[in-house]
Amino acid sequence: MSIPLSNPFSLKAISDCIACDAIAPRLVAIHGPRRRSSTGIIWRPGLVLTAEEALEADEDILITRPDGKQVPASVVGRDPSTDIALLRTEEQPIADVAFADTSGLRVGHLVLAAGRQSEGVCAALGIVALAGGPWRSLRSGHIDRRLHLDLKLDARSEGGAALDINGQIVGITVFGPRGRVLVIPSETIERVAQQLLAHGRIARGYLGLGLQPVRIDQAVADEAGLAEPKGLIVISVDPNGPGQRAGIQQGDILIRWNADPVHSVRRVYTLLGSESVGQSITLGILRAGKQISLTVEIAERSKPQE
Image (tube, rainbow, N blue to C red; front, side):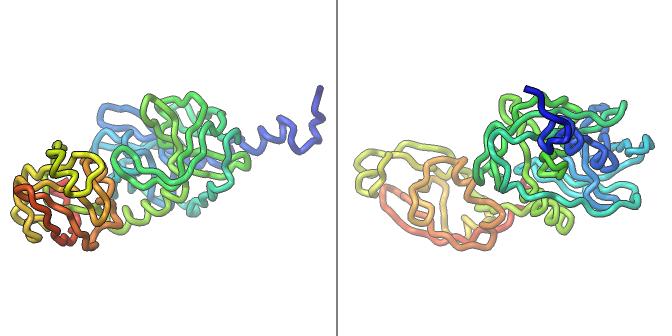
């Protein structure tokens, strides 16, 4: 059955909505020292958002502007946990970008991934394959929505814009595990970009402890009320860290974070997000088979420790 072109849902109308004309003046190509190319979005005059993982290094970065001119750029800040980086480059007169809310995106909605190559703007059309709620990345970054796309993304388009059916920017496209194409949603970008602009990085919590999974004697685990005989043994203590100040010693076994059992290093890393800095927590410890509780104030991880 043919659909008349006057129909607002015709292919022509859809094509006109998601054409790259409006986004093209905001897309730049980013070149690292080995000249690997990726894409960035002009967020504000002189400021470019891109995928952190696509940046080869912090130095020798060049940007190809929409007018074809190449200019240098420097890193304002990068956050591996959310895969967002912010660059500073030569200013051009352009308005701040407006990101669209992603709450209306559902499975099956069309999404356009727009990028820039040396030849010009490029695009790939796909659908939202998965739309979920907040999640933690493998590096424990807080991502406001889980959005997977079913499309083939050119590597040079990584860091480019994800556009909804109305041509509005809903996030940036990145590669996830096993080559899956993900969208870092607009809500995450706006939150992280503001912090990168203000501080150059995203704060993370720090205990000053080296931890390693360990099995606990079943009788001791039963006495401690643990469903699984597992914990995290302290293999090192930073002499200037919050763990040392709280009295934690090498050889102690961490079994609880506040009231919750903990036996995964990754779980601890997740709990040490930016919101944890300054919090006081109670750690349940096994020391020589006896249970003790120690209160620790989480510090901010400094750059040399990252």
